[in-house]
Image (cartoon, rainbow, N blue to C red):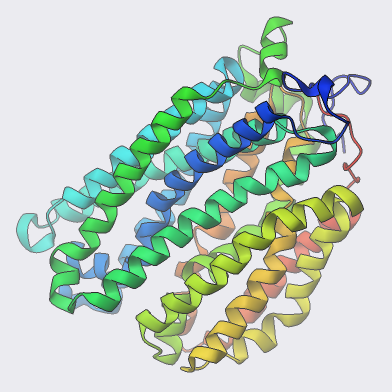
Length: 444
């Protein structure tokens, strides 16, 4: 399958000032771009993660309380629908970033995400406006899904294009640092609110305050993205006239193998991420009865460790390659999914060890996903090539993961969740072992 290079002999495009530093070192301009991209991405993912953190409360506010488990499943269905629209956002916003620049694409995505968070925070519940409440929730979540669909491709392209040749995985790892940091901030908000507020206060206004904070942080991200310069890689592409009128068509026509490879790369990564990092506290609460406060505290500690280690695994990938670090992640889940999930109990220590082990394995995927996908495509279709295949895989395997695991547990088949996770890991392991190594590939 083609890796999607349009000019193999082209040198990697350095950022301004890169000629004044040794090869492989980040310049001041590159560090500034990575910092701005990371912070902007972080605040956007706070808004996205808050929904899953407060999913049980949202189910009781936006759906009839008498429906119980049905209300929770309905809320999780809205969560999944947000993923369904992500490929649409990926196609539209990814193509927009390839035509008009990474900066403009990133500015648009964070504005949409912040606006939707304010809508969710301010929408009255089912008892006040009836069926209109879940309808507005659905629209807001669709808008967030549309935004998230374009975010990954634009931010990944921006960060990797901003890096020195020998630091691409390190720079790309900050995309996932920002995702993890956003989830961590959301988790901290959830931990503080669930630990300090009464159940009545949490349902009445506490969860809404979290979404208001998320929206305000989104406005900070918008300001940061307006102030940053676009990448030199895109600028050179635009200057040379290589930008495409329809990047989506060009991506499918010229790089179908690379697009298919991105799907295979993503399968295990997105499923394990949404099971372990996003949904495991709720799953553990349902399956073992452990309190949400303890579950969120465990998640918060593990996320802090995960985020701190991501850049180091990125540097490891820059040294030893993408394939071995990603294969270690997938192979680990093939072998350990069963024992890890069977160790879950209502003990804090048990949940902590299960969460931490899983997150340490996921490092192999998260530190590599932005760079390995960016290395599949030339700059004129890079944001689209990353965004759309990734969003399709996330919609199929990530967005449905909380619903499937909840359904399995509710149907009395909670012991089969490990097979679901292990099977996805096996699919991606085959892809990782057979794909070409791109560590030393020159990036236009």
